[in-house]
Length: 278
Image (tube, helix red, strand yellow):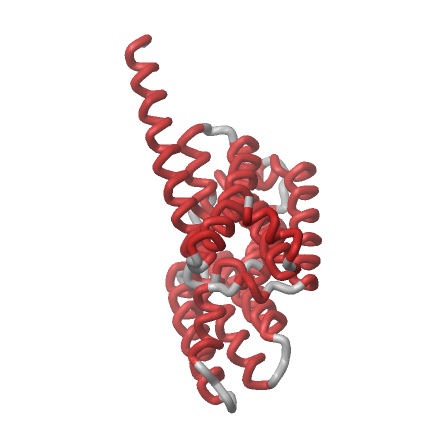
């Protein structure tokens, strides 16, 4: 009860709750596509490449989120282009962009006058208490777009996630959709950085979808369930972090891990029941 009372009293905590809920929904929807297409490593590469943009923006005295967004989107489109054209293996391109992005971020942040290790830690591990109304508004717009997109175009995206050749045979513009999804993945990652941080964010994008996939094989159900699980885990993790004074990103990871374990146990129990009655 103390947590709910504090939400009504402190604006920063209200912003943090809204951000965790919205980020959970957004990452759940995008993460389902990432997991089903088996491009988790791509999401990891984009996440770490965005750190280069953060560092450059800090060095130039600009908004770090804008810098991270530019780097992330360009990296996502570059990786997609390299893999599509066959110029370089996708995993190689991801590895290069991953390491170069992190190196540039550390370099620019260390060159910035007045640099402290806290600047680095806030973006690597998240600092949800620094979320502003503008951050919440941006996440809200993204989440509405993702929910609307999932409601209208889930089937073609599902086809592309599982079998691009089949999707192409159905007249779906696979290349255009793949580029769009890569850009949306990048935007989702950057806007959720304050909630989870670069190091921990990948879990919020993958664990809900993996947990739901243990319980169902329906792409639509996985998407809806992952969004709900991401939002609930974010809220629960924030409440736990407030109660026991833990880093919010870490608390959310603990909740996500617990949900994955529960989903696995439920799936095993379901298999046992089917085996007995089979």
